Image (cartoon, rainbow, N blue to C red):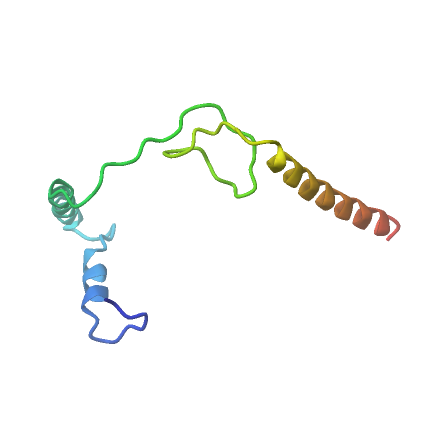
Length: 108
């Protein structure tokens, strides 16, 4: 486990700093190739799961939680209309507040 605070002798921080490749570095290409090889070895070791499929269909209607279609949801609304009521009330409330503000500050 790692702590939130970092000390002077933090090995993980030092490793992260060593792995940064700067554009002015004359050995940047060599370091980049080494980094790519490490990533390939790490990916082939079986520790990483394959990427989840992404949704490629048309854009869905907005929802309360701004959830995008993807691996577990195809974007089709199979509800009873409650989501539309909640969003409609939210948007109309925001619109009314904005409209009342515009009316109150129109003469200024």
